Image (cartoon, rainbow, N blue to C red):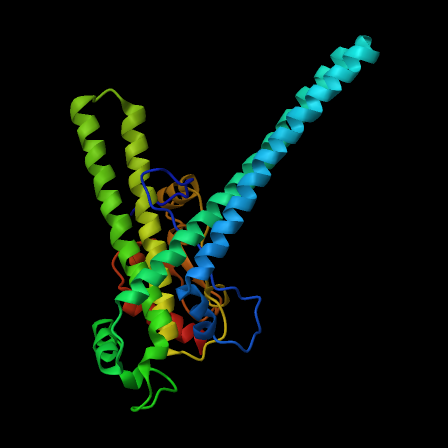
Length: 303
């Protein structure tokens, strides 16, 4: 069985948000399809770019403000009460950690906004590649394993172009699956190279192997997103979010390894559905299940 811990992003991967960008805080009656329209607008990417700049600026302003406050405090104390300089130094030292935590938190938010901006641009790019007629889109859907009659509420004469925001997202996630799997293969090759060139470099070997597991997990998560969009295309009147249907189980590498060693079946659970009558999908199953088959679970969860 493959183990899949969650790691921080590395320069070796094109990171992507773990959740959909579509904001579920909008009017509950609005369909997911309607909310998806904003994702194929470059204004959405520009908005995320602006937020990234804002949070980046805020992070550095925090550090500058702390530095200025510390310097002014030292100067003031040195001029008027030099006997208290050790206390001022101790106070400043104790303030470093909170200031640094705020800086890192703002930086993390900025990086997330940057990834959302890039994802929006990728959605737009995929949308621009799609055909513009219903007949051509019907062929696109058939390639996805979807027939017209399987799309609820869509008649034989209905225009299918309204589904393009969803199809664009599906194409994005399908490519992300391939991208992450390719990165996993590259890291596996890198691990083999280190084993051949530097067999005693255990740290580097393990680092490469952990990156393999990271990319494999990202590929599985991308498959879940693709399956969700696949199910929404079949159910275009769906008004919820993926979180209303299922949850990706958060479990550390160590917990999964221990569970596997002691044959705990729950340790292999990867995708948990909110409806208890739908069995969880295990990591072992995720490795071979198609997004089309997984979408059928999603459709059952929507019912």
